[in-house]
Length: 386
Ligand SMILES: *Cc1c(COP(=O)(O)O)cnc(C)c1O
Image 1: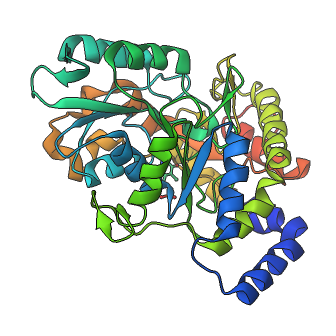
Image 2: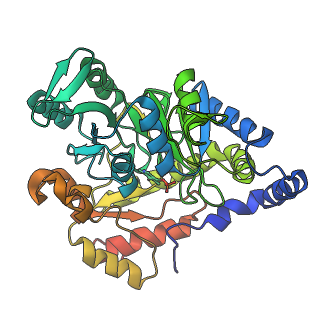
C-alpha cells in the first residue's frame, strides 16, 4: 500500500465548502490587497500565537528578512543561526546584506545548541556600549535566529539568557513551528519577533505562498508593516522596503484553516506517539528527542538511522513517502563558501545530514498506513514485522 509523505487534499476535504465560499466572497468584494479580511486574520493569528501583533507578508522567507531589517540588522552585520535548517533561514540573512554566522546543533533535537552559541560568543565576541561585536571581524552582531526545526521549539531559557547577556535580539524562525510551545509559551511570542511561513506543507498552510511576523512590540510591527510596502508612510520613504503583502484571499483561507489547527496538531501528535511506541522495537532507529519543556507540533517526524540512503531506496520501492531534510548543511553550500567554513566545522550538523529521514506524520494518516511505514522500516532492518 503506497503511503504519501503528505496529502493536503485530505486536510482540505472537511473545509472544502468554506474555502469555496471564501473565494466567492473575495471575488464579490473585489478587495484583493489588504482590507478587513487581512486585518481579521492578523488579529486571529496574533491571538493564536499569544502576541500583540501579527503582520502578514508574502512568504516565510520575507517574514525573516522584514523582521531582521525591522529589528535593526544592517548591511555588514553578523547574525547567528543554525547550519541545519531550510536554506531560507540563512538566505534571508544574506539577502539583506548581513553575514550568517553558524553555530552547531544539538544532535538529539536538531535545534541550535545554546552551549555552542555560548562558546562561540565567549571566544569571538565582545561588548561595546549597548551592543555585541565580533572581535576578529569587527562587525556588529545584531540578531540571533534560532530555528524551531521540525515543529519543536529551541531551548528558549538558555537562548534568552544569552540574548539578554549579550544584548542580541532573538528573531525566531518559527516557520515549522506554528502552535509549538516552550514552557507553555507559543513559538513566535518569546523573541523580539517571530517569523512564520504559510507554505502549503507547513502545519498552517495557505493555498499558495504566505507568511507573517509576530511581535509584542507595536513599533516593530509598524516597521514591518511599512517595510512590506516599500518602507514608506504614504509617499515619504525613510527606509527602502519591498513589496511583500499577504493576499486578502490567502488571509481568508488561512482564517478558515486556523480554526482547525489545534485538531490537526493533535492528529500529528497521535501519529508521532504511534511511531515512538512502534519504532522502539527497531533498535537501529533513533526517534527525535522532544525536551520536557517543549510541546512539538511535528511538522516533520524525523528519525536518524544507519544506512540511510539504502533505507530511502527501500521505502521508495514500496511507494512510502520519505524525504531528507536536509541533505547539505548550509555551511557546505557553494553560495556560503566565502564564509570560510570546512566540512568539519559543525560535526553534529554534518552527522545529522547523513542520517536523517522524515517519514509521513500528517494528521489524516490511517493506522493501516502508519503500520505500513513501521513494517517497511522494521523489515529493512530485519526486526520481526517484515
Ligand atoms: C519554510 C521555511 C522557511 C521559508 O518559508 P517560505 O514561506 O517557503 O518562504 C524558512 N525557514 C524554515 C525553517 C522553513 O521551514
